Image 1 (cartoon, rainbow, N blue to C red):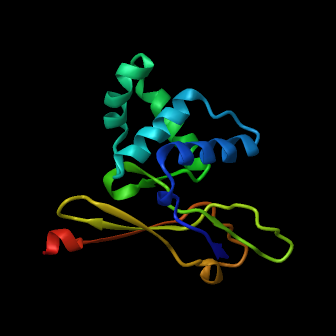
Image 2 (image 1 turned 90 degrees about the vertical axis):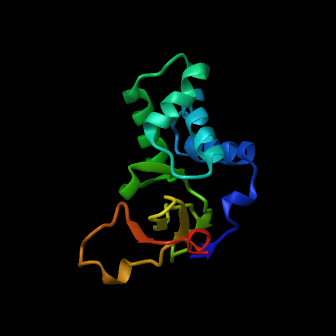
Length: 159
């Protein structure tokens, strides 16, 4: 696996444009609502709950209903653009860009395994790339999604 520069090195517009290219490259539509939801998550910089997104969307998108936002979140997650932090029931922008290069695979983008470090004091979340657990999976088991969450205290709260 070739690990590229973090997407956090890009500004919001560059990240949204890269997301658009990924989605359209998969033959799907990157609607204005999907782009706006991703933009809000990127700009927030932390794990954000769906209802907080709803509050921020209301002035811009004519008060979308919760199912509309959840569909956008599911779409963005399916394309590896955001991750759901299970413990917080919140979403965070994927901060990594990488390419898997396997035999017969010529550098196509794939979703990576996310690993989160969650501060129990401030609810801060830091994403890291998890190690590939492919060698320890049962024979014939196809991994579609993996989430590894560690709980503790961040450096800022420990100080």
